[in-house]
Image (cartoon, rainbow, N blue to C red; front, side, top):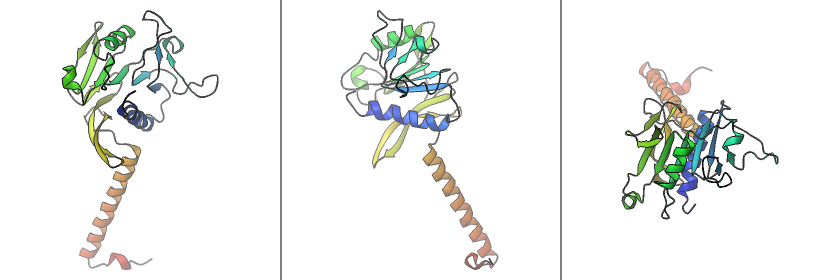
Length: 217
């Protein structure tokens, strides 16, 4: 990892998933975690995505130390490979468009997302690309946010403010293309709705000649 986006952006996706899928126990989202597999030259040499999502696995799988997964070995996860991997391209290229793409294809990763907001012209690609594995080859998909029916989520970009910094992030969307709100945003929206409703009620009472501040107890 040579820039903070490689840690920040995947963790934002993870935090939102923790809220969206809080009652589900059949998924795991790894951030900067080694994925061991048997499709390469040596099973002891992992591939390390900036993030990955697996479905149909245990949400919490305690290690011998009781600290959860320290890595993801496909053969220890009922041979379930990640359904999605994410790479955030940095100044130092990491084989996102060739070597890793080939590894993920052999591994059977259905969706491969490459986020390259800074160096996309250098690499002659688009800032945000989603590839889908079709007949053993990755095909660039069209549309953003991009809906993934096998995952039950869409993924795309969104402008937001983080610690006073207005910036672009990756986030999850629903089938209608609407952005999933975080728990904090949901609470804020509900509070704004309640305040708006209260203001409407006060206006109505005043229109009827009733002072809302002098209601009988």
